[in-house]
Length: 325
Image (tube, rainbow, N blue to C red; front, side, top):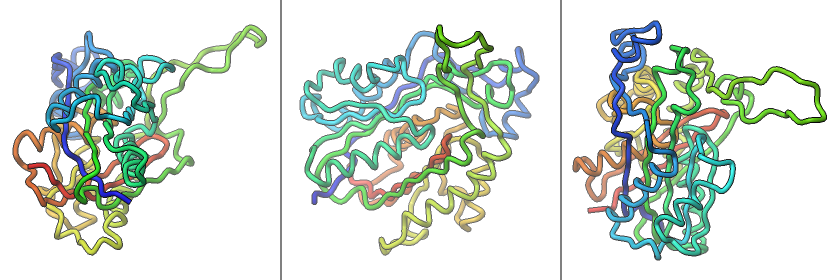
């Protein structure tokens, strides 16, 4: 078995910024309400970049940051719920654009937990010797599936991408857990193409927008996030006190506040950038990781935990020792 480390990160967000006051022009809301209820002040919305473009740019920056050339990459995983196509996979399109010839490439769908699921899959492939270098990307253009008349969701969702390069090396990925609870599927969902063909009677088609039962999702998240964080520490010899930063899925500042309180952990140890980017689903954690790395907040030897939850329900966490200088 091989050890696995994260050797580089990258991210990309659209240039177009939408502020809370801009939202108030077309939906019944205000800057004060959005900030109080979510912590979001602005978000990036694409007016030209599709999911593949954002994923490609984040991937290119991650490879440059890692000092890895595309020919070294033998596995590409893209986590997304907003692909540009049902097929080909977004990962295949990224593979072609970066020139990672022959790399196994596929997409996964785990909603906001997608990046964590992707890390888990890539880590196992590298550990068992199947691959040596993996590119894991979380990329979303949630504006494609947002109902801009629904203030409960349109103020939350945004667009962006983040990526990480994993390789055989030092012990960087220490432990991870993932899980799912399909009984909550109806509380956070976006329908795809319905069963509809020439042999069926005509019927109304459900809009392809994301919908959310905010109260139920909140209850699930404030319980599951602390549970994931504690579970990923089990058997490692580390405690909450050893962790320098917790990097949660950037969904809602009130969820993070509640999780920190449950864990009795200083809220300042939870890194948040939701105020700038909103909820970018599978992109939110790698976006935060890359921002922290670029700002010099992460030093070799630092222990961090990333934790997320999403539609499905899905959930997961990873305990990581930062090894990049």
